[in-house]
Image (cartoon, rainbow, N blue to C red; front, side, top):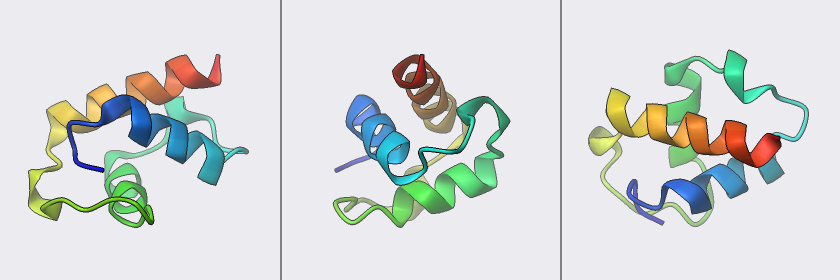
Length: 64
């Protein structure tokens, strides 16, 4: 997965952290959780605020 795979990342995060409310996740934690996903293979430094916001929103949508 790459940073651009926002929906796939959101699904993986929802599966990996089922008890977490995505609305309460700090971007530092979100970034770390994304790069720790087993299928993630992208430059860690490319995960800026804009992409993290998109991932968080996709995760919120997935959780609802």
